[in-house]
Image (cartoon, rainbow, N blue to C red; front, side):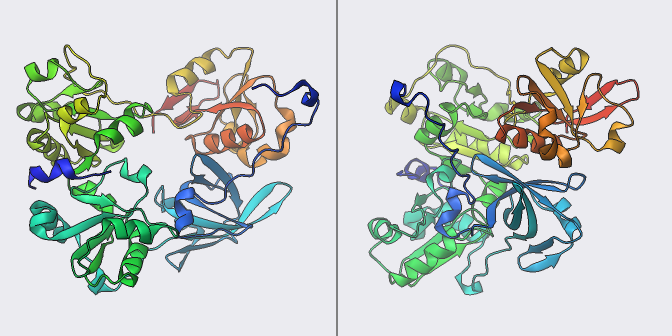
Length: 463
């Protein structure tokens, strides 16, 4: 890749007393479709769309993520219809569905409980073969750069996705049903025959195919789609990240990540981006031996002084070692400083530390161990396993209500205590946590592989 193209990658009160006795406002209705998906899809009143997170066959529940919200839907394995890309699947296929897979559920609702009758998982978007380009084509284009390669590479995703990283040399024209043509007219070349390649969030994402259709309608004759898009690119190659995106979407929000300063130690100590760890190109091999586990998929951002050469060398080595989600910060430290962003001075850390952000409500294994050993008076441990599982042993003082019975037995739980749910893996416990939270309880849960013997001795390990 020609590094000179990196720097130009992304242009991118109190209520009045008179109302004191007024009844509280009804809670806002839950969204039934992620905002990101509304550009291409709609969900009916008896449907919900989101990203598949988990399935629990013991409590017959499916968990979907809808932006920051969580939806729990019951199902009957004997009657639910499961389709993936239009192909019927047995209910057991739910066990193997990829987390994050886009899904739509049709349901019936009775007594406030939603029960799924059908679940669709998106299959690969069908695009005519002559309209597709593949990874090797895009990698060759990026190596030349937009000017020498005579192309325009367009990221069709919305800003929050681009803030995770993008393909070098790309511009951002997010696809929307309103306003796309005006933005495209401003950003796409006047030459309608110039090669344009759109990409988005992978083989099930409609944003780049829809962008292609609109571009063709505008008269562009050489537009294509890189259907595998960002997910494939970041598995195989290094992406780029604007300094503003590093600050706004990662550092300011406290999202865990690994930030690497690839400059010589003396230069780095004079000023560096807060939180950075020093790893110059010659130190990469040794540093990788102490890197976080690949299974954690830590987001890694690398920067140098500004030309991108050292940063790209370090980032490429980390990617080659099997880590996805590796990006180079465009403009490096010089660009960061020029933007007026804060810098630190002194000695940088030399060893990478990465702790993934726990899922909302997860108190962590160590905290749960302490609760199990000595449960405070203001806390109730809720065992949401099935009765046959609990018969083998329960934590002393815990209350058993299987997850599938929880909504019908809420009256048995105290409102003045914090309720911490557990199961055998954390899947049902997390579902119970969301149910309790929605009903106004002070709730938490623990994720981990749990065994409890007949004497109430707890064994818990990370999973």
